[in-house]
Image (cartoon, rainbow, N blue to C red; front, side):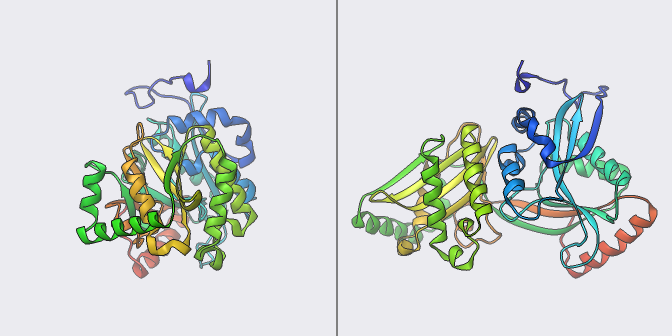
Length: 384
């Protein structure tokens, strides 16, 4: 029987007490567990493609400064039921304060752990117990890129409340998401003014006068090597290339992009959209499909055609074809207050960072003073 065909006893069944184990292992220790890891992703309480095997492993293999990243490996009844990358940090942003932090990088847009559905509370209890027993020099646990509300953060809130453990939201923002309750055309009309829609129709007409305009969307691995090469070149040709932040500006991020897209495509987790003019891509979008949601991972457009708004036109076409089996929302992965997508996608996702007390009395007293000073400087709102 394949791992993904095994259906465990529901771990939240009243009266059922599964065996629980959590270990902190080098990330390479999970390389032989790809099948179990992929099964966890397909049965996760909430999706996070950035912690799936096909994205996290290339991140750790190709990005700099990953040697000290470890994996909290959680199992219940002998099955892999939770994954969270962590590191012991000597600094807390610009301050020399040691802590245990979840690990995310600038091209990972969600920090929720992968947790098997029904195991959320047991996972968090195990993580906090582990941090209490093995704090090292760390004064607290810091969780980044938390997205909510949802079952994972709800379970964390419950565990924290039951234990009386102090936790504070130290950063909070919102970013655009698409969760329409309208048909695509009605949603488009509700999002943009009649004047803006008229201008976009004019731009689309002017672009079609310049040559043959085509929109193409695919999900498989066919021709993915060329598609990735086209995307990397398109992104590097614009402002990100000039700023040195394009994926192709570093071999590590370019390799991560190529390998993660191939891994996602082979698992049916990728959607690629292209707007082309006379066969040449002028806007491209890569989306990770992780039902019940999807993550708009990376987009790029040709700035030579900026007067035609190719990125917006691509989003317009993509919105009309956004229906995907099992997908009810799409995360923009964009910065808060993004000047383009915020005007098209009207719903919002909450993204936060949370710091949690660990260890004994002295460590928790130190944490209380640290977090009091931090939140006094920059209040972040209530705990998620």
